[in-house]
Image (tube, rainbow, N blue to C red; front, side, top):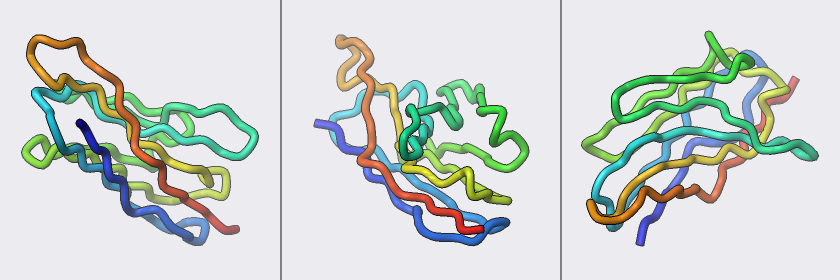
Length: 121
């Protein structure tokens, strides 16, 4: 069993900052990619940022220069530092982790429960 526990969402004024965390625990053999997606009401879920085990990072154009993704491999945790937040950043943010529960099994895709981020104007 694998659990992803997210924290750090909340309500913030435009221009403010929030930091999201997502900790993976359970039967984990190795972790490849760790990332964040978001889904606003009435919209499809979209990629925000992703970081691979090798440290390669990809950001959505809409968050480049404002958001920073990082990971602590010793803690199996991924972070998303969000600065200069805008009302259009309002969404439920989901953690996504690609990992193996065993060296002999295929990589699986795991999702957190989601955390609400609301940016007021």
